[in-house]
Image (cartoon, rainbow, N blue to C red):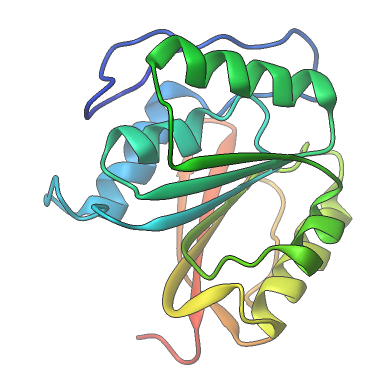
Length: 188
């Protein structure tokens, strides 16, 4: 696993063994950021991110590599938080991040962040986490009006078309995984 592009391009990232930590594959991460940047390498400059169920932190670290101003990583597993911290330290990142060891729903109640981008990737077997997390994001103020929420999920699972004010506007499938993209309100 490596950083795909940006300041930390090609740098290796550590992971943990086991099924609960399932890092977003390099190719899927590349596709995600190609969509979000739409050919503009500076598209993420100064953006604020939430990386929920962060695991290794690969998605948030990729955002930092591409110019995000800050990323808040949230994962309930202390081992995952330690891997995120090691990955950040190995890249020499000293600012612009926070690591929260917490259940995601608990963290969402106390985060003072209003994010441009939210990425969530719970363990695929915890399907109820998608609906619950997306509902909280769709009903609250954690996502900016023009913000984008992306859920990574098993391609055979549908996390739903709408959650509160969030409406799905795009789905991409790659291998066994899929990405569902959400925005507030009616999106063409």
